[in-house]
Image (cartoon, rainbow, N blue to C red; front, top):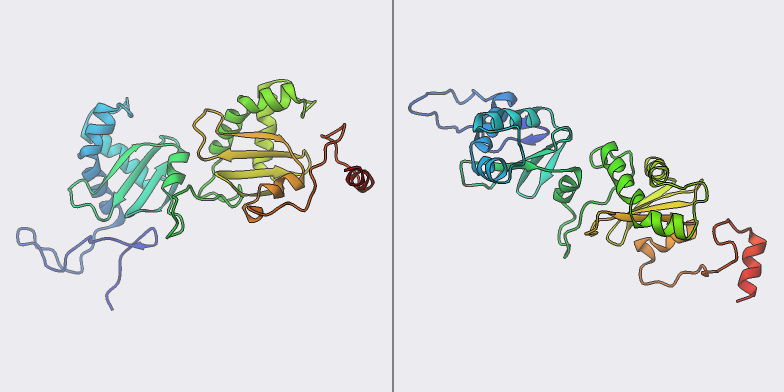
Length: 280
């Protein structure tokens, strides 16, 4: 049985032909190494439209000025990616240090064989395939912060920074006083990073993903569709509030009453809860 060449656990697409070349005869059993394959891919993309569009026109790589330099850079990304995985019609490699993504297009009919451009972690996650037959294409749902394939420490830091210095600080810290021990955006950012890194519960919600920490009663919501710099929100929240945001309860009336008390930010005991229900 003929051995199938694999790259990152997947078959190599048309790496060699069973018919030897007339000009350069090659035995059918001779197969390029992984390094050789990645070199040819980097050369094809580095000398293609990606160089003209993303290096010369968009200036996404100010330290690169020639196709050869771009090729060397792409080869470094291909051989040392932070994340890699399948995408629509191909496979992608992303490197966090250079914020570069390289996409190999299996169905490409051009000599480029794919593309490469400046890309953050958010851009990478949006390209991860979702379930088939869904009407709306949405970014992948992050299961837990331990899912290294999707979530990185850098992503959580930038998310905490964006929310901690956004409208959530003004509204929930300064105006509502939900976090008495916090007085500056930097303190709020540190608090949110702690919640994002060590959530008690986490899961998908409408248009995004949420992280909830029991010890601080804090919820952080990342909004995938947010067009503002905040990228989401954060506020004081109990376990009931977390459950209300769960998609499993969508379209259903919550069995938990929304009770307003004089001290809304303190956990109520069962006695206080029952008394509040009787007063409704």
